[in-house]
Length: 562
Image (cartoon, rainbow, N blue to C red):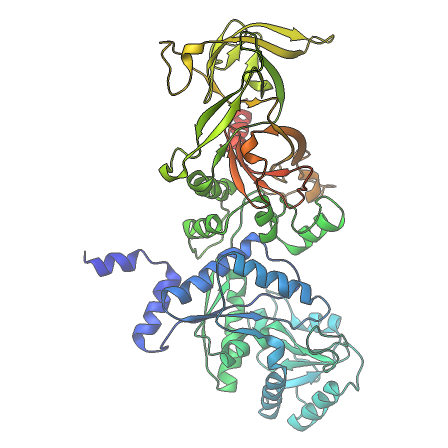
């Protein structure tokens, strides 16, 4: 096998189709676009389309436009336009040209008149319910509208009167004249324009008729010279209509190629689901770190690199399937493992007192910032006789394979000493509130001459020097793989995870005292965290990005065994 054939086989079907068209001379370059409707915030599913469209253009030295398909003024706002632009740039992409479908309203109107004059479109007086009845079903053909045979002259007159605001909303529509018996429902005389008195976020009140998405999309691609219209699979059945419009108008004709949209387990990315989550207060907003929006993942602490890596990893498929959410979580783990500095933090503290530690003595011990990055250097951590450790790292009576600290047992304190527990202090309810230990002066990390070997190492912070912080422990919002599947009487909100957010008070080492908003770190042995924008000069707030390991996989596996 030659090198070129090996390279070709490694390409996905979209890239192969592009190569074929370039080789045949159908197109001279790769000109793509990302065409969101500005009626909401982008979610993680959009990231795949962004990476694909911008990535294809970048790979082939082409261009990628950002075009807002703003044909529905009742749902579109400038706020969404600005947020979408911000999200795309955050992901690491920049468009070659910025366009709006509304830029083309005049041209689209002229082309509509052209189709009317040539007998390919007509004004229909059926209302919405009647139109649906005449349309037929998947197994039964539709019926011709009683207004289908109007003359081009009458249709042109009515269409212009629609434009001039002579008729009430919903009383008339312009429809393409194709085939009411077509097995493809999209070809059964689809609506091109509807009467709608609504103020548009860019054109104001200039128009009282607005084009439909199907009528607008292909012609917008044509105007911009797009060569490859990369769409998700739900538009596959719309492709014949896309082609029909271009052919009837005899204009530049891009090629539409469909791919499977990104579907992730445990997520519900439909707008109606997300709107309910926000409006009914199940989350704090569109940027809540549990939300599936790009800005939610951004605030959670995900990096653009990790999302791009994930999209490349899942690839481009022809058929819909569900990707396990752990693959996205692993992408951020892998990236932060390489770049995040290590710091020590205790989130469920219990005091550890070293009874033979010299009173008032404080050591500055060295710790490595990132064991995988030699250039990351080291930092100094104060070590004293009063420490905090994680409550889970101690057992008064421990099972055989518990290798952390237990009574009458020993453990190594990371970047510190080996300590031996000889006693505990309890409150009136029998809870351990203080662990009493001695330390071995010859066992200091990096210069251990004690000859002792212990199996466990735990982290800690000096009680005197630690900074108190708020820590938000974010977890998966839903407890099941497919929250849309519900039993009778339930809705998707019944699958919400009651522990998707827990807020605790933690203590962090002094090196984190001046960490800035957006700074990401690994809390050693706990997970990856980011300084949240809610932080103040008085108190820092950390969001958990992801634990060090996939704890959900263990929970599910245990449940299946039981």
